Image (cartoon, rainbow, N blue to C red; front, side, top):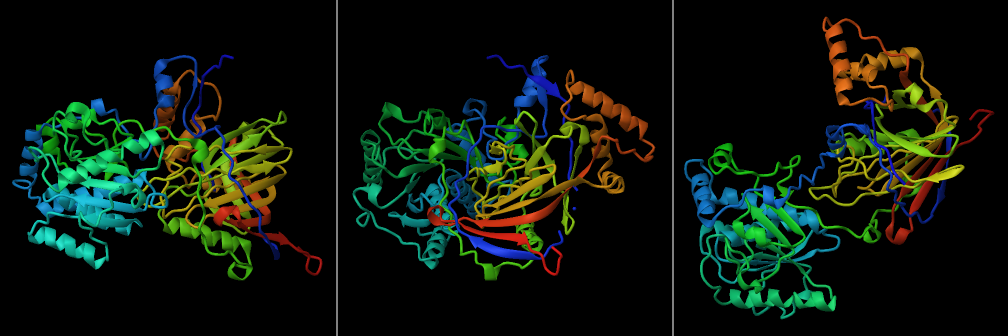
Amino acid sequence: MSMTCSLLAQSLTLAYHYNTSPAIKSTCNPFSPLVSNQSSSSSVFLRPVSAPAIRAFCSKSDAMSSAQNSDSVSHLTQREAAEIDETLMGPLGFSVDQLMELAGLSVATSIAEAYKASEYDRVLAICGPGNNGGDGLVAARQLYHFGYKPFVCYPKRTQKPLYTGLVTQLESLSIPFLSVEDLPLDFSKDFDIIVDAMFGFSFHGTPRPPFDDLIKRLLCLHGYDQTRQKRPVIVSVDIPSGWHVEEGDIGDEGIKPDMLVSLTAPKLCAKKFSGPHHFLGGRFVPPVIAHKYKLRLPPYPGTSMCVRIGKAPSVDISALRENYISPEFLEEQVESDPINQFRKWFDDAIAAGLREPNAMALSTVGKDGKPSSRMVLLKGVDRDGFVWSVMYFYYNGNAAIKSVFGQMFSSPMLQSFLNAGINISPISFVPSVNIPRSFWYSTSTGQVKSWCKRWLPVAVETSIFTYQSTTVRVEGSVEKVSDEESEQYFHSRPRGSQIGAIVSKQSSVIPGRHVLYQQYKELEEKFSDWSLIPKPEFWGGYRLKPELFEFWQGQTSRLHDRLQYSPQEINGKR
């Protein structure tokens, strides 16, 4: 079967606003998220014309996958690395403890990106006597605050205030220090992660006791790969201990770390690294350094202290799962009004600071039973229902529409994708989870909101919050909002968005993006005098009027809680 790509006009849609006495009933049912490989978004779609158009469609900005091919990133020699450190701590005014804190935090956030504390919580940090060991001490402290259970082996302590202070900080957190003699001969039974922070780029020669023995113990872990036994993952800080800084693992007899966290910039030995996770940490390189050494470094996403280098390893989708751990969700704990309960959870999402928590995917189901999805934004909720704005002609009177709006957010670690399956008579539709990170952003302390609506004449709405492992499902009727309401919202938007709504006739086939740009430029010039931009007749709002709410909260072993609100007749009124 052959497929045709068509460049469609970009959808620049946004969104815009119950009145019953609810009865609450409680149910408890297992609920398994479903997976779909269908994806849609308000981005550019293609038709078979130009290669640039195809490249525009394929390019994406993905928060943690600012991942770049390691060959395109600069690698430092040992001399260059030393010179950069001297410059940072000399004329540029950095102190050793500043750089050590930044490096250790980068290591900890990199570990949190790849290895969740729920699965890899027991961490052993083996720290050497130099700065690399100090980075490991800082990383251990940060990992403690990230929810891990760190242990520290620090056999050759440096008696300087900086290092003794780091030890005191760890001891104040009751983080255990283990001597080499206290360590088990087999690390695999007691630890999930081994942080190799023994030697950095300034190390020369052959490792001496007790580090030579510790490196041998790490080497022994590789035998578990052949027996398929679970072993701890090895995370090396900047340089895998025992490797040559520039030539790497000479003789292929050194440790094989699963993760390498390069600091400042990768060293030449990193080219020989073949593990699944390579991160760059240390978001502190000033432009003067980058210019002098002609450094090509990947951009750090958002506020992250680390960025992946190279392609992320493939994942067994069937193995992706979350075991929800939540407090009981009881009837006496909820608001009597479902709108207030909904607002409570939505306000929590806002307070968590996630990006565009009102993003939602509108999905239509035509008479042929085929669903399609579109990303829009919900802009308000009140007692009249939920309102969003779209291109009217896109739907053409489809019999059923459901919409899902979502946002994933967590702590510094980027975690899982959450999938929601919504049953819409006469079909069961599974909304896409492969949504651009501009709409889905994962964090361990955040929440996911995902709304689902079945449309015309009734609708279903589902919201998902990962922070509290909660979901809200709403059913009701849908109607167009008044022209006055659509007009008012249209003119509250930025002028650029108003022009975009006129130019971008959703899902119509166009020769290329240049058509959009040209039409946009023409209208921009036409209304450059700041005269009123007329709302197009094909653009306006719809309102979902809720009639049933179902609040869901995940529990362990899929024994989830559900509370359902439905209207009752009281004195002849609903």
